Length: 165
Image (tube, rainbow, N blue to C red; front, side):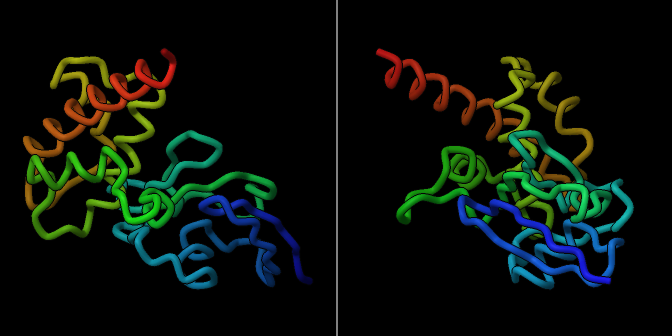
């Protein structure tokens, strides 16, 4: 039995036929849509490498059934840069050395964007560390990650104020 779902992935409508209702959103993104920036780390929802935004909220895509997200808007790391210009969070990660090996970086960046959009980042590094605690970095680049999130939040807030004026 096949199941048809429709998703908006990085701003583009994608219609997909699933032959198995157990396909995770992570496997759909990586194997069917060839969006391999979202990483498969633990495949158990414990490392955060697979973090994507679904309808503006961050989720571990390895724990989400693709079928349950029919009609959802999904944003992956591939959908962030616009016209060759990095998203402010991506730029901040580079400037603050928020990565080493880079494996966890897509999930870290997507989680950071979600944290900022949720209004949960605050201006305190401890609050950022707590908000990002679902994303593990085996290289221990946590200091750079925290600095990047705080810097990106400041940049985004300034840009928002500028746009509102």
